[in-house]
Image 1 (cartoon, rainbow, N blue to C red):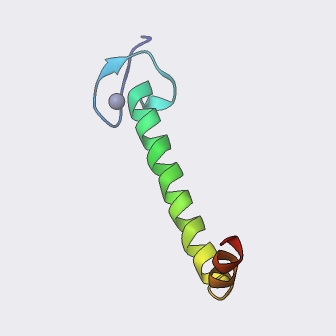
Image 2: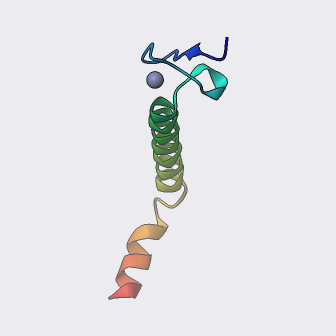
Length: 59
Ligand SMILES: [Zn+2]
């Protein structure tokens, strides 16, 4: 009884957490992307006034 079934793609195999490695990577990647987007949105609202000045300084 070592076999599990992936909750995401229903593949059978031995893996931890009920999700196979490819699906784990996918879900992890999606979670990371979501975090990045949330961070970006937060940064945008935080530095709304600062970004234009910083860009001008770079040039
Ligand atoms: Zn899977």
